[in-house]
Image 1: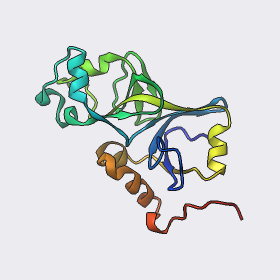
Image 2 (image 1 turned 30 degrees about the horizontal axis):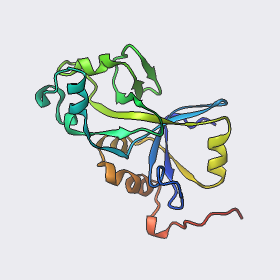
Image 3 (image 1 turned 90 degrees about the vertical axis):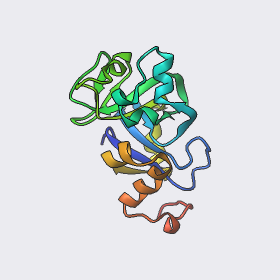
Length: 187
């Protein structure tokens, strides 16, 4: 079973502060391991407009829309100097990988150059860094009840405030955080 194009939702009992209350979009999952992007952990004081300015690109809100004021996300502990853009778009960019019919991940700068044009993505989430799991590591973490799995919800991914994504993802599974045990075990 592949978990690609699904969400991992951290269980309340996760002790690692980096992954506490995180929601991770799984970009790739196969028999060699998995790769994902945290979607709800903002980098303090770094907005998309700051990245565009640093790259000497037009950072006009009228061209990019309200997303220009969105926070850049800490995508994970690996390669935090690398940028990843999750988006929904029909256009494939220079280094785009199609994850599903509705989701694409792009690592090339050309996606940022579409600001103000029709081919620009309407939904975008910009992250620095990513998460990885070795072969069978994610499966073991699931068996140890570190994560819950949920299908992707575009509203959570792109339109829910960062601080509310974890609770909203749990609620979409029909779970109430106050009734969810942090103790785990197997019957």
